[in-house]
Image 1 (spheres, rainbow, N blue to C red):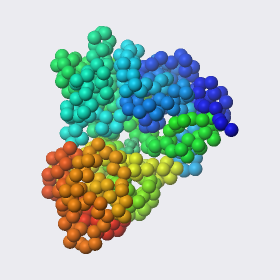
Image 2 (cartoon, rainbow, N blue to C red):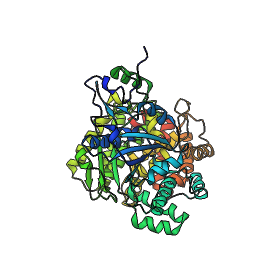
Image 3 (cartoon, rainbow, N blue to C red):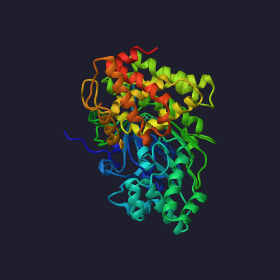
Image 4 (cartoon, rainbow, N blue to C red):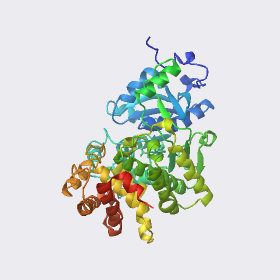
Amino acid sequence: MILPRLSDATTGSLPASIVRPSYDRSAITPGIVHLGVGAFHRAHQAVVVDDRLAAGETGWGIIAASLRSADTRDALAPQDGLYTLAVRNGEETRLRVIGSISKVIVAPEAPDKLLLAMADPRVRIVTLTITEKGYCRSASTGLLDPGHADIRHDLAHPHAPVSAPGLIVEALRLRRAAGVAPFTVLCCDNLPANGRTVRRVLGDLARLRDPDLGRWLDAELACPSTMVDRIVPATTDADRAAVAQALDLIDAWPVMTEPFSQWVIEDNFGAGRPRFEDAGVELVADVGPYEKLKLRLLNGTHSTMACLGQLAGLETIADVIRMPDFHRLVRGLMDHELGPTVPGFTAAQVDAYKAALIARYHNTALRHRTAQIAMDSSQKIPQRLLNTARERLDAGQPIARLGVALAGFSRFMTGTGENGEPLPVNDPLAARFAAASQAAGADGVARVGDDEAAAALSARLTTEMLAIRDCFGDVGQDPRLASAIRVPLASIYRHGTRATLAALP
Ligand code: CS2
């Protein structure tokens, strides 16, 4: 039997245990435009907004946009924007239907519709989850890259932009021309000082278009920094089938997540906001310490586990953390190299945070794939691992474990696994890393049979990789970083990842 589709018309038939919008969706007006309507947004910000809509704040509906593909719109449009959030913990799954997204616009199909929505005076916040690379900045300097193809396009065609910064700047220009105050820009991506970073990117782009617009934006635009945290693996067909069975309705794109959810926001909104604090959000004066704690401890170890896990043939984070040698490296990184660089918390708070992270990694029901996290590693490593390495080197502190993590990253980026299998290097700098690997003679190399040859290959590869300034920046030129990477990298080529980690203290 073919099940009916989830939609406003069918929510009445849902099993009683499934939470659904308790509010009149037709009475909701748009207050937020969200760019980048992937699973993360739908498992995090859209859920908080759903809580506030249910509490009666009807002016904060979300118009969401995909900047590239039509997939999410095609899945959600026949469902009136409804989708299921599945919160998984071990054997237990809790389901809830979320109603905060009223419409999905596919930007490349209808950029004018999206700009119109962003220029609507009722819209007071633009949130973003467009991943690190969506900001068109250099990963190492953090500044707008004026040579980026999308930015070059947007400067040539400012009224039909394709990049997120281009869309925001154009929408702000339209608002200014109409005498409408700017919306607040809320970056929900894992960038360092994300509010400040995005403000700088937008200011730089606006100035390249028109110095006057740049000045207005500098004076008027609010971009609070935020720390967002929830682990959201990509949805699989098995997930879709399990959700359909529980709903007795088809949901083309449910989202899977963990029970944990955290959102810390700098309370600096230019044009009002929902009462986020009543939905569990922490509003603070300075997000810096929270962001560092999360980017370094969580995302830093995530990228480490992703790259090394890929090399060791481990599919999910839960598979990685259950291996005692990987667990020891992760814990060692947290305790000795990453954790000590995070200010602003007591030792007890940091300890509790670390323990909670390890427990979250053990959640087997999530099936969070190492390949998913390893994607775009070149855009992630600078803020997750390299900034810490630089600070530690400046302070004369050891970086042995960071060296292991970066050896894993470097080896992963060659695209060849330990058994000669291709690795899924899905990364904007993939071609640069492939060229470095080729120059070092590492192309297609799985293992090296003797110590001397492994050391020589590792030395060449480390030199070639560290010269990729777009990723490694200045710290790549520090010989202490090179030597921290060289030794474990040689061992990975000679003995494999598992044996290398087993031999670590
Ligand atoms: C992950 C993050 O894919 C990745 O790079 O490290 O998406 C991580 O799951 C989230 O930041 C958790 O809040």
